Image (cartoon, rainbow, N blue to C red; front, top):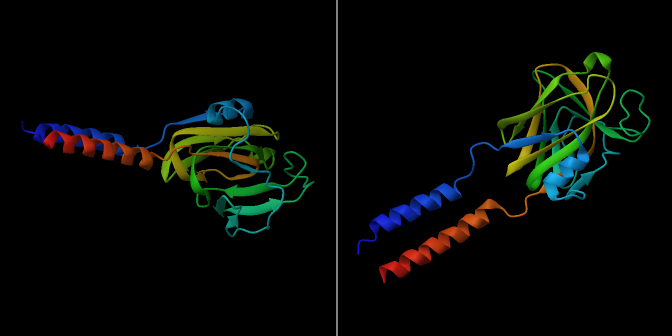
Length: 206
């Protein structure tokens, strides 16, 4: 029996399952509890950062399990009158048409979320674009008044970074950052499938 057609079919199936998605599908949330339930079945994420302390600098901010680069101006202290989200420290970002901020994780994640606050009334309302692993994926809008809000996102594909950009001026605060790491990396599943197909083909040839 000619095994070439069987080999070709198995190879095509392997490639289709092993190939990564070109762009992640992302669901956005404005409620932390609902986001936690869909992101990790409830409970806190694997990464929780209250952002209460850190250097006031635009250099890279190493937070242990992730690093912030770009226009991230350090962690403002407790009691700052402009943008205190929950009465403690927070991360201050300045985004515009040429400045952006990137969060890069040491391990792939599938969801992230944070509290947001516009810096002042005249800077409220801009839309922040989010690129995941370099591809445009979703967005969020700052509150239209000088009040707090939550923005959370769940992806159907694990990723290692996201970047915030905007065409508007958007000086605002981010606080109480949280993320969920990927449970099972896709390459592991692909390798198991590869070995299974290989064993099947070897047995057929015998």
